[in-house]
Amino acid sequence: MRKVKTLPPGRLNLSSQKDIPNEAFPAGNNVFYKYRSMEPIIINKEKVISLLPMNECISVMEEAFRSLASGQCVQPLRPLMWLPDKRGLLGMMPGYAGDIDVMGIKVISVFPGNKNFGLSSHQGTVLLFETRNGQPLCMADADEITAIRTPAASAVATNLLARKDASTLSILGSGIQAAGHIEAMLLVRKIKKII
Image 1 (cartoon, rainbow, N blue to C red):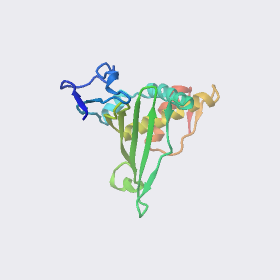
Image 2 (tube, rainbow, N blue to C red):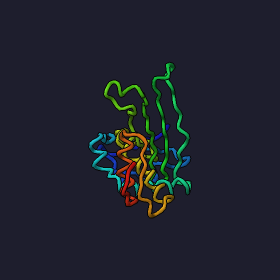
Image 3 (cartoon, one colour):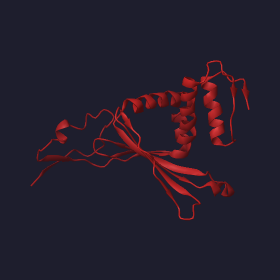
Image 4 (tube, rainbow, N blue to C red):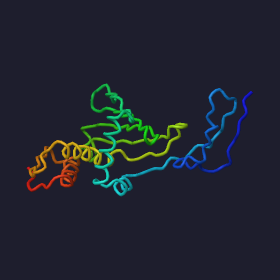
């Protein structure tokens, strides 16, 4: 029979992990701890915008690419599930960041015909979990994260690969990604002309 040690009620401070004793995870020991479930933080579109300015996201993306290249992060291929009539799909994009002990997934629906209904073609959610017990940490609006993160990733590539004196930017399309890319490129190059 296993012993169960219940911690006092309340929230665990997972950011410092001081509330999680190492002995809670013994190998081959008959003691385990029972924790209360955490309530994940909900981050809506407006909060994403305030918490993730483009210039900071560019720096975070550069760091993320370095972590991925060094093997500290895992980013499997993303599976797609098409609806039988091909009018839309569900994309699942999992990942793990070992340097910050977080795993997550972006689940996004893509429905190109949504423009006819005044809706975004891409809608979804990002879910983050801590990797000690797999408890959910956060659920965030994926639309706005995507609108910021994708141009930020392009800005990292531009900063590394484009000539330092590049001053003309060519944008194909006019949607949210176009606007985000203009904002991001203006942060890494002195753009004088946009075509």
